[in-house]
Every structure is written in structure tokens, then in C-alpha cells.
Length: 320
Image (tube, rainbow, N blue to C red):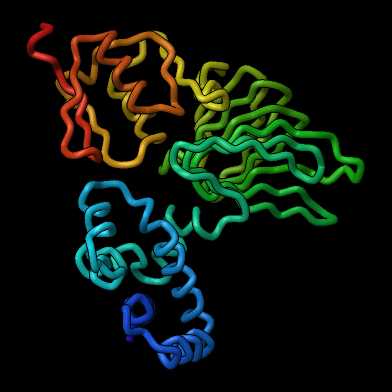
């Protein structure tokens, strides 16, 4: 059996154990047997912890179907799990889970949920702000101050260190070394966006051993595995999310909707027919549905809803 198949089988076993323990007739013997299975191998425990993360978030899942299933008289979690068909889909193979954004959020040292913004003061006095659905690991020791970005976006304001330990942010695409600075790092998927507002940083791509690229205050760049691409001037408006706001100055509607979607549970899409329209304004990220309503006030658009979970921004034929 391949490693991927073995991981998938362990995930299925974890799902079966959780379904058994969710059942109304689960007995002490079932809990004891599950404990023995978890102790039998580290991968068993890893898969179980991932399932626990799924369990903790099940009641937070969006969608009327999920809420009705959870609230139905006599409904058990075992039935819900079977009905929604989410367990192994969420857990997947062990390696896939460990690389997924969901796993990163569950397993990270510090994280914030969708729609949340968190501000942290690190042991050295560095200020770290996490955007919606972001996660970091912290690696502070006698030799280094390392922030590992697992998912999302962060704004870092570095503090001087008496021990002169270097401060850096590591992503899957490379390393961002702080040179006494305030800077933003956002995971875009295929690359990272790095913006410097004060001081400077050095960028080192993960798969390129060339000299680091220096990025000074007022500049931005795209950090990929194999190189760095200049990204134009820095814009303080990009940090408005730290205050719960989204600033738009002639911004495309599809780009604006994509940003709002990061702060809202469920599916939010923009009809391509209206994506190129431009809008200016200030939109509240702490209340994304109100932000969408404000968008429809600024432009001849409407919100087409499917339940309370799926929203499409489209042209309003009555206001053309």
C-alpha cells in the first residue's frame, strides 16, 4: 500500500471512530478502544486531532442545511456526519491535511477565524496583526525570532531585540528578513505579496540561492519560490483591514468582492458581467453583509441569495 493510501485509510479509521463515539449508544468500552487505537501509532493520534478540529467547527459551518441537520429533533452527530459527507473529505489523506489551509489553521500556534482580526504582542515587543483566517507558528529561541506564516496575511511591526536576534517571516515561498521595519506579508497561493511601510526587508526565495533582494519603505514585491518581482509602490490603504475597513478608490468590483469574501463565511461570487465596474468607498469588514449592501447602493447591482450561505453580486435589471 502506498503512503498516500495508508494516510487515507488512517483518516477513514479516525472518521469511523469519531462516528462511533458520536452515537447515542456509545459506551465506555468504545472510548477505551478508541484510546488504544490512538495510542497505537503517532499517525493515528494526528488524524484524530484533525477530526477533533472538524468536530469543534461543525456547529460553525455555514449553510441552512447544516444548521437544520444539527438542530433537528433526535439528530445525532453520527447522522449529521453521514448526511453531510464531510469527514474524510475534510481530513483527506494525512499528507494532504498537513499541507491544507484548514490544517494550518487548526494546528498553528496562533490563528484567527474567518471575519476576525487579532493583534498580538510577541515576547520581544514585536506587534503582529493577523487578518481573517490567518495562522502563524512562532519560533523564538536563543538564536532567532521566526514567524512562520501558515495561511492568510499578517502585518508586522518589529521591535529592537537586546540579544540582537534576527527577525524573519518564513512562508512556503521563501524568507522575509526584517531590517527594523513595519511590513505586510500576504499568502496569494502561487506567491506572497510583501509590502514595506517603514525600514526595509530582505527577500530570499525558497528555491533560489542568489543574494537576497532588498525591499525598502514604500515598495512592494511578489515573492515566489524561484524569484522576486517588483510590485509597485506601497499603499497604506492595504492595511485598513487592521482597523476593520476596506478602502476602495476606483477598484474593480470583482476585486472588491473577492476581498470581502475573505471576511465572510459561505460562498460569495461576482458575476463576470459586472466584474469590471469600478467603485470607491469605505466598506466595513466586520460586517461583510453590510459591506455588500453598501456596494449595491453605490452601483446598479443586486445580491442574489441562495439560502443564507451563497450570494452572487450581479447587475440589477431594474436600475440600468
